[in-house]
Image 1 (cartoon, rainbow, N blue to C red):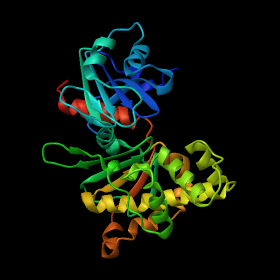
Image 2: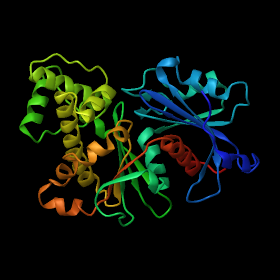
Image 3: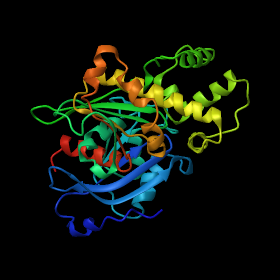
Image 4: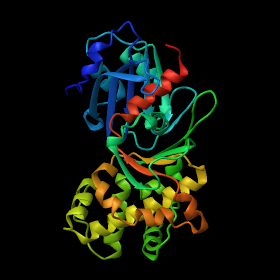
Length: 339
């Protein structure tokens, strides 16, 4: 795999700030970068090298980081953004990453002195303010909002959510496990879907519907309710068939996905007081940008009784996830440590 090209990095002398590793570990891919502080307050992180790896091709994160570094020198620090909950001993409780994660084990395997763990969407929240406007799709609300709590949500292999909160001595980011909260159904079809899902489990979580695997759950459940055998095997196949109009059940599944997403984001905006805006950043959303824009998302987002008027004043935008995870992890690290 070839590192992404970053011409500006050639202008940064390594003595300016010590380089370190930043990794964004998702359920399907790991993104790794060698980074350093840029000295620019608006964009504090400089990417020197960047690569994207498929989890299925590697035995663990240590193997990926070792491959990325090759025979080169080991930096003192590595920050890892990952879904899940980091224990004090450096291990991570996670439902979506395919191998165990341990900061101490990675230190031993890779040869870096210190590995730091941060929640993946807490990391993305730290990077949200650095998003280039060209990578944004505005779904509803004003173009900008007063500075205030900002919600970042992303359906990918799971569903991550974090809240960025401005404070006098620098922002505070609240990591959440919102994807594990119970899914709320609003329509007769959604209620039928949830009832069917409850046959196999006692708890239907938000991410059981609002994620890549969740889209497959919706599609499979609709097939069962309609008495037909599923013919599509991956989330990409379902989204492609839905957008092409070649499979009516796939299109209904994506319609339900977008409606549930709008309703859930409206709930979260109210629950967290996200007056500063909502950023949607997840692996599945860039593929369905136009479908999402034309779907029931906005209507369902605003359908909160008298509070719909308040939600009209909150910008909701889709952003390209891309390198946000590693940039956010590095931004979090720089905020925690003096370099």
